[in-house]
Length: 468
Image 1 (cartoon, rainbow, N blue to C red):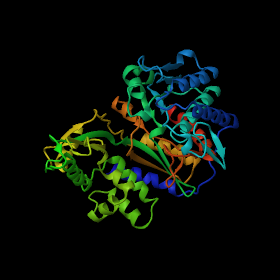
Image 2 (tube, helix red, strand yellow; image 1 turned 120 degrees about the horizontal axis):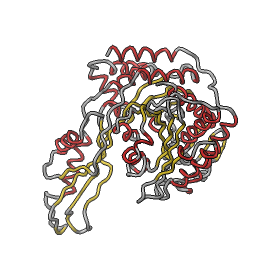
Image 3 (cartoon, rainbow, N blue to C red; image 1 turned 30 degrees about the vertical axis):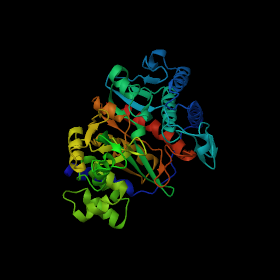
Image 4 (tube, rainbow, N blue to C red; image 1 turned 120 degrees about the vertical axis):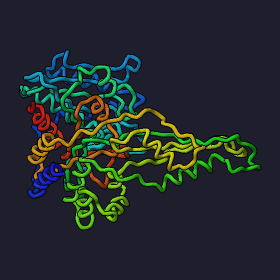
């Protein structure tokens, strides 16, 4: 707790300065990033199409920028040729383990009739850049590509190699074609002593004011279970108490009333300590209290009532799909539900399933995992990493906090972490807390934020590639 307190105190210094206009990259580099972003958006690398075209186009850009062919590789599993990945390396002075920047090339689907703009054409209007993937995460890809090319053009030689891996199918839910495949089948190409994944980062803005840059050190574990009730069925005129739909519904109703126990770790305590300085009144006091040992029950009750804080406090499981019956005039023979869990690191699949079985409280319900979960350990909130991010953020946005966090969602960081590579989600693509559009209609990012993201990525690459 003393270490956590010292780290939290160091973050407090970030709040004392006044915000200034952030620096932006040279005009030529900004133009390059815009061209890359436009090209990536128009490639429309949705799951059904794949990412090989995007990977090949980006490979050509690096080759044209002077990277050696052996340092630019496009790879796809033989059975999935459309699921291309591209890996680029800028060589350093030493043989120390590399710095890996990790991103994904694929985007979620978008329909033209749902948007005010063509989702697969980059459109600028009123200071905003619209297009599928601008915030998740083609904008960050463009920043990484432009920054690595800028370093090469400047003749920069890092202390250790910088690797950029842009992968397939992150949005598809863990298919064995992207980051997972690269770590398992091409480990030497991506092996690193430190991984930075902007997709797992968070930069928050509210009412035009940049609040914090979060350093993601862990993420909840994605687990999916199926609960199923069965019966012999029969004619609907002869109902019985064994009706699978009713039995399943009663169990799900008990799940809806259940709250998993509090489970904090080093990261989430630091997160709440940092957020307490951004909040006011009771919220500030509650966040500070929960960052300390033995928070009062009243504090936990208030924070648990807010979705955004509740999901950081504990594991959550929720029914997301339900199916039942086979005919209007027949008693159901089967009813099943999908239960989707986001589990705090350190809790196992077996423990989670036991808890679910206890909560459903019906031994006749068959409960099983839908697919194996990937257990990913926490990357400790290392002072060297946090202070390095703080130096870059402080130089660009005085007064903006740096806060460790645990992501409630999922990213490709689980594969590098489970592969033994310390991984941190860091991004400065400031998104509005009240109007986040990732995966949604008219996805966008402001021109100003995009330009600052390019400069931030460049500085981060220099900061962490200079460390041995």
